[in-house]
Amino acid sequence: MAQDRLRLLSYSDLQNWNEDNHQAALKPFLETCPKLKGIEWRKVCSIAEEIPNARLFFETFFYPILIENEEPALFTGYFEPELRGSLQRTSRFKHPIYAPPPKLPKDKPWLSRAQIEQTDVLAGRGLELAWIDEPIDAFFLHIQGSGRVQFQDGETIRLGYKSENGHPYRSIGKELVRQNILQKHEVSVNRIRSWARNNPKQAKRLMWHNPSYVFFRIIEELPEKKGPLGAMNRSITAMRSLAIDPRYVKLGAPVWMEKAGPRPLNRLMIAQDTGAAIKGPQRADIFFGTGDDAGIAAGLTKDTGRLVVLLPIKLALDKVSGF
Image 1: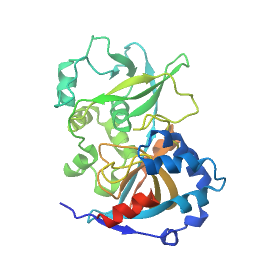
Image 2 (image 1 turned 30 degrees about the vertical axis):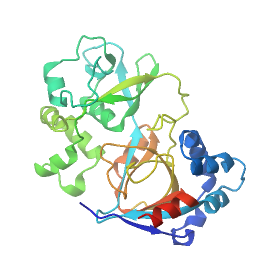
Image 3 (image 1 turned 90 degrees about the vertical axis):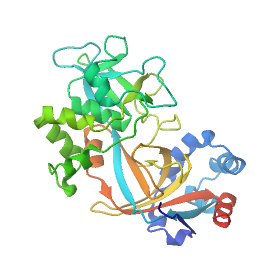
C-alpha cells in the first residue's frame, strides 16, 4: 500500500496563486459551507461572507496542505450530459434509465450490470424514468451521475444520482487497451463513444465489463441555470467544483489545483463531489459544466499536476502534528 506523505506549504509555494479569481471560488464555497461540520469549519463559514476580499479570506484563515504518495497525480473531467429521450419506449428511444427497485440491498452487492440487462429484471415495474436513444450515452450517464434529458416536445427533465447496485466501477477504457482495440494515449470519452456507435454489438459486451449500475431520481427543485447536485446535495459549479477522494480531502474544502498538460490550469476549486474512479490524495475530476462542449473538454482532460488542500489553520496544524 502506498505510503502517504503530508507537508505544510505557504501560499508563495502555489503556482500563480495571486493571479486567480478567488472571488469566483468563494461563491461555490459558500454554497456548501452550511453542510460542513465541526467548530473550526463553522468559524470560517460564519465569517466568509463578511470579508469582501476573497483572497484575503482564504490566506487569513486557511493553511495549504500537500498530501501525496507514490501514486502520480491525475486530473480528469466530467460534465452534465444533455441527452435526447422520451417518457415512453419507442423504436428510437429504447434504452431505459431506471429509478432504484424496492428493497435494493444496502449492505451487499445486487445484480451486476450484465445480469440486470440480460435478464430485464427491472423491466415493466414502473421504474423507467426516461428512455434514451443511444446505449453508450445511457452508459456514460451512469458514469457522470447526473444529466438532462430533452424530449421531442421541448420539455426537459434533470436526473440525479439516487443509488447503485454495490459493485465496484471498472474502466472500459482500460479494457479497450487490454483488448488492443485502442492505444493507451487514444483513450477518451469522445473516442470510446465514437467506437461504441460504430461497433454496437461489441460495445454492449464491453459495457458489461463494468459491473457497476447506477439508479437515478428526477430532480425537480433545481433551477435550470444551476449546476447538478454533487455529493453534498448542493449545486456544483462549472470549472470551480472538483470530485475528490473524501478519505483524503474533506467534502466542502477549498482545494488549489495545478493541472499540467496541453491546457494547464492553476485555480482555486471546491471539493464538492466524489466518484467511483476517484481514489487517492492526488486524484481529482474537474466539473466542466453542461452540454456537448463541456463533454468534449472533459473527455480531453487526462493530465498530471498537483492538488493542495486548504484547511482551517487549527485543523491544518493538528493534521501536520499528528501525521
